[in-house]
Amino acid sequence: MTLPRRSFLQLAAGVATLPALSRVANAQTYPTRPITMIVPYPPGGPSETLGRIFAEGFRTALGQPVILESVGGAAGTIGTARAVRATPDGYTINFSNVASHVFSAIVYKLSFDVLKDLEPVVFLTNSPFWLVTGAHVPANSLSELIAWLKANPNKATWGIVGSGSPSHLCAVHFGNETGTNFQVVPYRGAGPVMQDLVGGQIDLSCLEASASRPHIMDGKMKALALLAKARWPVAPDVPTIDEAGVPGFYLPFWHALWVPAGTPAAVIARLNAAAVETLADPAMRERLTTLGVKLPTREQQTPEWLRAFHKAEIDRWRPIIEAANVKPE
Image (tube, one colour):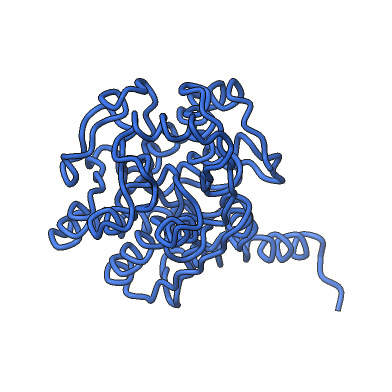
């Protein structure tokens, strides 16, 4: 049978619109099956810990299981790359932080652009870093640590969460400012760093405070200075880096949620609504604030706010990282 030209063109146009109509229909019914949350770090670190907490909240808000997948390596870039390459249908989401989506994005030559190849969903938490040592280190203040390092040049070991990470920048800055020398040991994530600090295999590091605080409270590690302008309410005895004598170096550690570029706007809106609902839940807020993380205001919980904030963070840290000459190991 031969179709008239007009009928053929109408049929072809109808077929061409089917994928778009299918995406719209899928977005309207989203989600109908489990969602994978990629965290680009191994278990035991702050991102994996917070990711599990938010996965519980999202499961309640979305009515579907949220399965956390930890993908460590290369300072968060391997897991982030997997999220970038995922089908943009809302069934793969990316929970991560300033380390992978700002520091590593500046230091590493990546096959993707975090600002173009990921769509922002929501800003979730903020918390400080602090400078910590293993309990075996014979220093109980930052001045004592500096004296010990100078007396033992290149003997101490500083664990970092991958080259180009905040902990790496912290090590470079600290060494430059204090005139101390030590060995830098790269790890795949903060969890292994904490394990080796507790076990005495390494001596010191800069770590996100909420995840490492239990080890501080148990006496398995020591916190010598908070990398923030004000003291941390849940650990008020730890001095700020200014008070400890190496002023001006502040490292905020924030987490947010992204999806692959091309994800339908309706799906992003649904995920954002679930996150807003989770952040508004009193039990969830108490659980998170007890950990010591700061939650965003309602005005900071939009995709547009995260987009602008993310770009501003990259613009702010790029000259600092380049000046410090931080390179991948």
